[in-house]
Image (cartoon, rainbow, N blue to C red; front, top):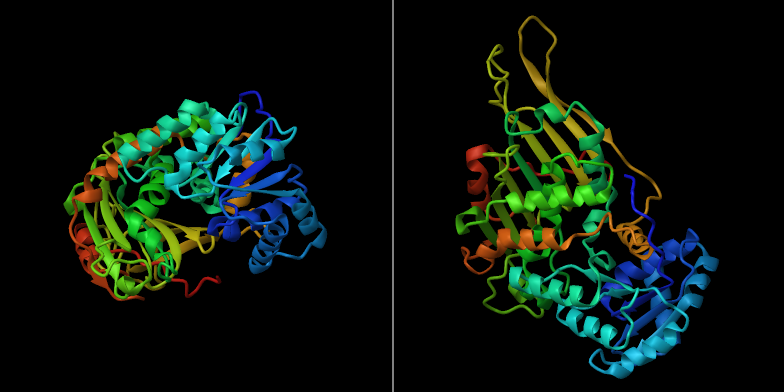
Length: 470
């Protein structure tokens, strides 16, 4: 998608707050290494954290992280990355930390500050950067979750905007950097056959599943503060809904895409308690950092309506959870059956009507299900999928793409303030007022109450990974 605006200047340094943390270890160092391999990283990378580390310790951490990710095939790329690293240790509340950072930046005039830190520290660091004169001509990259409800998201936006102009704030949702997510946008608007059926007249329901077959992996304390609705649904799944539900952008520019996505969030009906089913896998309360009587949901299913001309009356069913039967993400758009039963078996007694299926992970695919007549005299048939696998070897990882974009000043794949606040407004009514979490067995598809939620419109589509190679 093109961009009509003058190109922004690329960042001349990358500052990573929280460089000793989990996110840097798992995601950021491997992404930086991949950028170095492509020749796309040639600016100083300054790590900042509270730990009193030496530069040697940081280099070792980076090397371990990249090895752990199974990446070190190119020693010269690794050496190049290590040569760019610098380290500033100090408390974020101490102005001296920011003075030391200013010194480390040297001639750097357009740094990109990446806040890979807990959201509670965002405001502290943004104010510290401002006080030290490190916000002028700089960019700030903020990790999700952006707030934990509508009020905190507004406050966070207010603090960020008091220091940085809006086009210098890059709110990361790494899900938007995935190839398969970008493919939804392309598939919808690059093909003409979808538009006539992509509305309330032909679509019976839409469902989106984001399943993980593992638990909270020792991050119980974090999960206790978030829960599935905040952690995954309000951001990742809502972003997918927006791409599926948005109107065609008015012109070829990402600003137009952002406008249409924001309108989808604004048209979503606020959730009520009976639109939501919460679950918690058996054994979650034994995780370290989890309250013995915790009611935090590790599974959440909800029914959503978009009160727009295109989607009036079409239910959207979203669900996500940990310790489910498999790890996959899929969208199923179920179409209405033909209006007249010309053939006895054309109304789906044996399963679903025609549908479109988007597989988002672990691989990327699009499938269209259509009925085909069986051989013989009778007019009976069966449903088959036309299946299009869309795998790209050697594609950029989401973090590589997003870091590169933020440093280049390209805001295409980042989330806008109005969209974030509109999305929080939808879930805000049920963040506190909601039914209790039902227990479910690890390895299942969540509590059976989620089946009752969707029963009026059929059943959940459970992604299976049997036929398709991982």
